[in-house]
Length: 426
Image 1 (cartoon, helix red, strand yellow):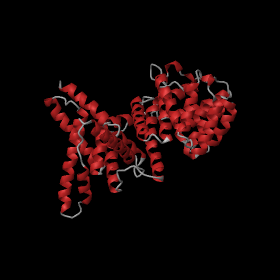
Image 2 (cartoon, helix red, strand yellow):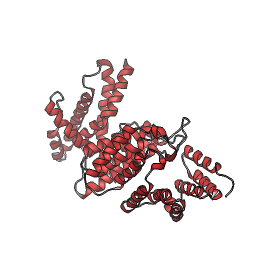
Image 3 (cartoon, rainbow, N blue to C red):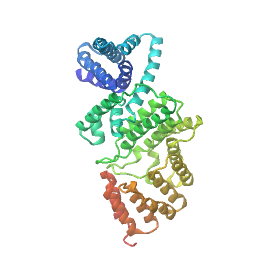
Image 4 (cartoon, one colour):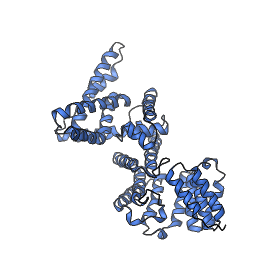
């Protein structure tokens, strides 16, 4: 019985924790304190529900308990600050504090609208540029993904103390910098939105192609990123790049079942069984892309990448892929968000559209780029293009160099196999 109750608590917490932390943070204006008070509510549920039974509305019970904890916290802080005569802000927060009546439909609608605003504030706070990318990822997964420190540590193959330190330092950094719990306005909104989208995509990419370890993919991270992206699209429906990112992740995630064989070995895009793609996710991705395009805003990096992914999704067979269109989209992406990695992807597309020699010419320029010196996909692409040109010896050398640089065991094995499969003649 207790096990079933604990499972229910865990499930409700995973779904509702972000909303609870966000609602409390609006009252206390400190993300670290808000998480502690929300955790207090969770502990109370763990203590009381096994004895008292599940409440009729578990999420509402947790929310109400956490908000009451916030009210107690503000009262204590008010008493402490009264000695210093600086209580105006806390009095304002106390006056605004109302524990919602979830039995009233109008109150419920109003509270849901407020919770949406709170979630948006929480996302922008957790992804604030004052934090390092690693700290933003850890804090976002903790606050908005509802993941435990242990789960984040397992996902990123680091120790629990490392993750815990990142989260503690992140909350301290936000407090020290006095980062306001708010959605930025004007020019700051677009600047900060870029940071939010970057964090969500970092989480997705680590799940889609793990940087290290024995598994090529970590689908749980992809799922968390998709959940965060969909949430963000609901909270910011007028931002085309949000829909672009959701479209990109939906379409890429659709290939999950086809990306590995039964032993977990990677299957690259051109060799995947497209019947195993998830066509529901593809339809959702294409619909999100339509929403991004319909807003009439300039195409950004995520929308352009989504359009590239859509080209692959619309091709029934690998040989039907519109490579000239993909090469053109990568050229536009280089104009919007130039990077050597994007140029490497353009080299692949040009190689498919115009022949391997044309792609290799771009790669040879990139070989001089210091930013890609440790990037294993650069020699991997070089090897593939050399192999297509019949230059087996040089291709083998490139594949072996790529394997040496690869941090993921599955990728390393794939690249070594590519080298071994080449004929001896150069």
